[in-house]
Image (cartoon, rainbow, N blue to C red):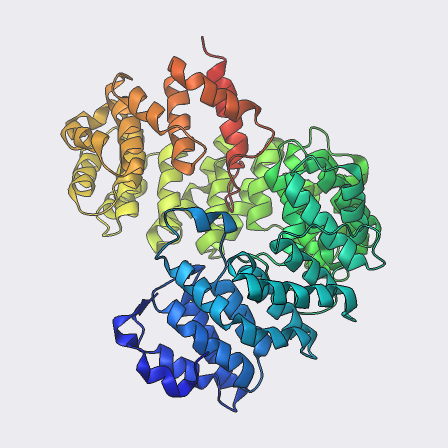
Length: 620
């Protein structure tokens, strides 16, 4: 342990942290001793940012440990925060200590320093403040397996005393977790304390893995329903608090998760725990929408405020299209919330539209919004004329940004009726409001007029590469004139920086892009995988030959965003290399979601992955 007087004995300039030389660390450590609490808080925040940056530690991190330990005992206040900084600095997977990367690593040096000063920190286990005791337990647990035998025995004894005698149940639960880091397995399912039983069950679930035995599920579901009222649920590893860890454990075993979510919701959905768990299950497991949306419907009356209700309704709106036939109870509830003036109305109406309830159409017509109009165009194609009229009016009123984009995308679902909105699209192009998507929409469904072509020719000269490309392609689609697009794309593909976006746009030219092949072909072997994927797709579109594209695309297939795009391109070609079939079967039949959601996407990427895989598997 070292006092601030020794800070100048360390060559901080020769050490590095997240932002380069660590010359600022001494002043930050000195600031911990300031009487001004804000100054100390800012210093802790800065230290989290530079010697522990987003989970990464650096050569300057270990030399700071003995000074931070001194500050724990001698700086005024914030002892729990300083202890937690020490704990997260030393956080590591115990299995890594045997790996070749451990000796000489920054985290190994941190743990060695922390093990040396730990005996002086052990009195924090008896601190009057429960937050300090909880943070101290995490410090002990982090280096439990790395302590010398004598120190280890003393530390384990102190933790054992806390487990047996601490007046706060959640501290006893933390002590039980800390004992497990010493290799102790304590059976505590019959403990009189809810928190201790829950901690014991979580430890057992972690050890056994899914599927969990029934008694564990019963404890997790029964004793996990109510959050701890304190504000000191510090993480044990990484950024996981005990609550986050519980949710992750239950999400791993879908049946256990559904059981717990149902019980938590039936118990009042305190802290929206059941609702959040349901959402995590939807994002983790396929085909669980009927069960989880039923749980969210049951959770709605338990929400303490409109914010909680809006979260439930938003989740329902995101997944209700996956129900083959949304039930009357669900649709009636959505209709009820959609009639209110609260912040719940918008997500409820969006969910009602996506549930294809006919009552939604009249509500949309009375209170149109960009997202609901976009969804209604898909759910109610028979109402295209009336919906297009609303889109036109809203665009004419000056909609901009994401609102204008959503409105223009609604036109894409409105068939030939969308042509009525060409004047508004031209105005968007003229005023540069969502001009790129407006140009694309004009090209795909517009009518060539002198005004239209004039505006597109002008936009094709824009310094905005996305706009110039979209406008030049629209000209080709409306007039058949490929020259403006060839000129634009020759410049884009010859320029510096990423070109995959431009390659993807280029496909609309088809064989008319043949003069650009000398620029496309070298990109088939580009280092950047997105560029190779887009070049292969463009090459096939231009030449009509799959010979060069298929091997490149097949090599990129995977449960990744670029892998999904490659799969989409391969499906458009309609060829499946035989060696790809096992991968496609894993995509098609995995019970787990293999790709996460993307905000504002029409289709969940994992759903598209599964659908494309099944489609390709059906090819002979």
